[in-house]
Every structure is written in C-alpha cells, then in structure tokens.
Image (cartoon, rainbow, N blue to C red; front, top):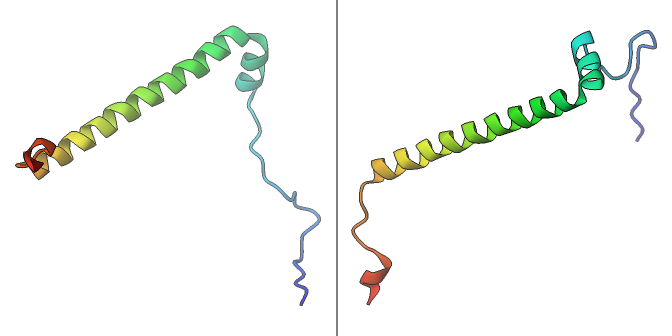
Length: 75
C-alpha cells in the first residue's frame, strides 16, 4: 500500500528560522566575545540546574523525614 502526500509547491518544505543581523554579524566579527557569551550561557544554565535539583532533593528529604535505620544497623 502506497500513501501519497500532496505538497504545495509554492510553500517551502522545511521552515527554518533565519538568524537576524545581530547574530550573524556578532558571531562572525567578534568570535572571542561570542565564545565567551556561549560559555557564560552554558555556565549559568548549569549552575541554575544544579541549584534547582539541590533544592528539589533537599525538599524531598525534608518531607520524608530522618531515616531510622542506617546500613550499620544491619549487624
């Protein structure tokens, strides 16, 4: 069984967002600053995710309360 999909030839097949003038000129003219900007964005995202998940794990631990048994109690 063959399925045919009608495609409008006047419309482009794939929509791709176009880079604006700032992104194209800044990334090609100021490569060092562009690299530092990317590193900064990644660092901020990593620290933000670290703080978020640390808060989540501490909140879950606080809700569960202290554990009564430890691995040393198995003896």
